Length: 382
Image (cartoon, rainbow, N blue to C red; front, side, top):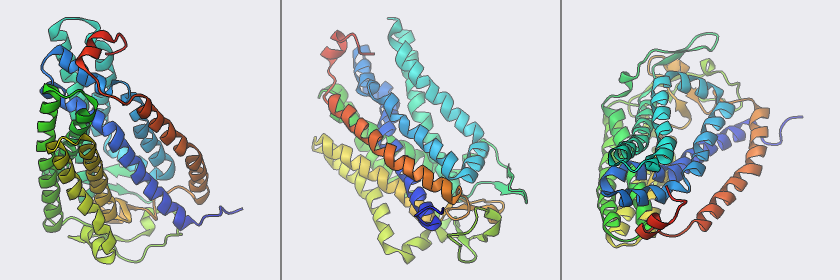
């Protein structure tokens, strides 16, 4: 029996869910990464650094669920995307995982010894665990927008013709720095909410204001580069939303400026870049006025807007190919089967609300500011 939801709708739903998972990861684990990237700069003494670490110490592991969910969803719903991206970006992903491994080790081992040099080295390891993933994730998105050097043969085997250093070109570096600014702003906004007011709080606020301005400027610069540097891809004929998942049956060509086409067809999509600019501005105003909740809300809005801008600009493309546009992967030609998408949707409808409710409950229970006095007296703190 055929699933009660048609193939086209399921493909669109899973494209949206992929965006939701990316946004969920950014909004939760994003402030963990941002806080870690700020650690050596906003906290000077050992007690101050322990306070910053414990601002995320109780929740960082749970927040990584979104990262795992995102990888699993790509594997199950978009097998071609998983195969091409995880093999092509293998070294970049190894770099990210190596950096992320430093984070749990740093949390667990930093305070095992009272030696100042020992603790300082782990503090910088935590910085690497926050900064490097933020940068590499942004660089990866920049390469997706410019096209990835892969091709598919007649048997749908993928071949990647690039290298690690080739990922770091001017546009991808702008995207990487934008990602860092967005994440640092989110981390600074979280620290403004989570730690007691004082010198560390003030330092985090100053970094947050700088990151907000950098995010606005880099987002604008990225938009100008997209419009003027010839990036974009376009289908040569109307796609078949109900067709088989075979990228070689679709027609794609490189088309400078094509990433702006959707805004002409669907003007409502302009809300995404508007949020991308408005969010950091709101966060900056919230930080300036000492309204921490407004600042955190603004950084969240900015992250949603920036991620949505990428997804909406590229639709229906997911992974375009720079060396063989005909191999490009889209929403319509790279998904799993009709039945698979439906079964996964049923599972998601059941379990995603449970994850959301549990996450909300955890944050409610753990709500409250971390103080220097608590760090000194609570034996459960890192």
